Length: 149
Image (cartoon, rainbow, N blue to C red):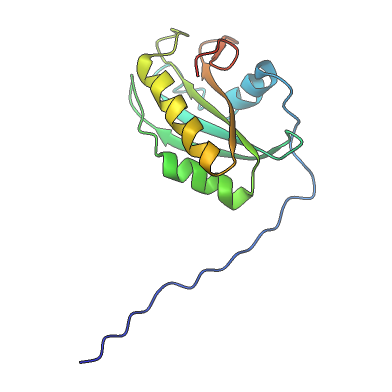
């Protein structure tokens, strides 16, 4: 009996947008852009995890809503976050999630996750610039600015 294995064909296709997104120079600019991608009807109810992908000049080339969870957590799949980054041929990433409670302080799990994604990104030469926690009104917390990873 002859076994024939068929595998999926892999095709590489890259068509960058002609117009680049905004340039990110600091965490305040990143938080302002990120805030527009959160569901304002549920930002105080459910955690969401949103990722900004940047090119070498720090222009936004993509935004990806990685997950929507519950009141106090959401599931984050590092492989998918980095796979999207590879598909976009990004140079760096800014991670983000909201705290429905309004508490800006990152949890130990937030810090542990950021470090894990940071280390995985290093292997792929994708720099994790920051992890921003979005809170009520215009408040946010930058893990990079506070040396939390």
